[in-house]
Image 1 (cartoon, helix red, strand yellow):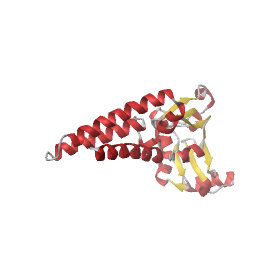
Image 2 (cartoon, rainbow, N blue to C red):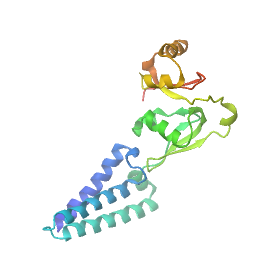
Image 3 (tube, helix red, strand yellow):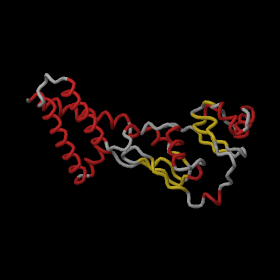
Image 4 (cartoon, rainbow, N blue to C red):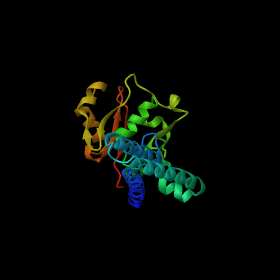
Length: 217
């Protein structure tokens, strides 16, 4: 009995710690403790179903413990901000007025693709349209568009595509906007930079571009 309690306690907090270390984007819609509880309870339930020779208490006791831990962490997080920050993290500002905070991006292990996907899910294709982007404690990215974006951005019929990401060309996207690699290199020469220095280069169908250089983080 003591062994079951000890192992369950250890695994609950070990998995929750592992999820916090891996980064928020792994959580989806869950808080860390919610995800851990759901995952462990699912596994514990399947163990007894698949191995009927084991006593049912081998699953019942750990499941009840996990429920207790989940309730405890929820109550403690509501009453103590420091505990909540440790177990659940806190919202992080990822983009301000079209500028990506690369330190936050690195800390949360987000990629450029994660950011672009979140933008497209909100029907936003121009980085300049993003007034504020916040990574919630669930790992979801909340975006507040620039209220003036409809008037201060000349949008092309073909939206921006990522042409250079993390120093590498995405050649297949060149055809979508009707631009050659040589034309792209001409833009880089005008900016006096090389592709290896670029975190993200977006170009739309009218050859308008948005350039984000890599930062040391």
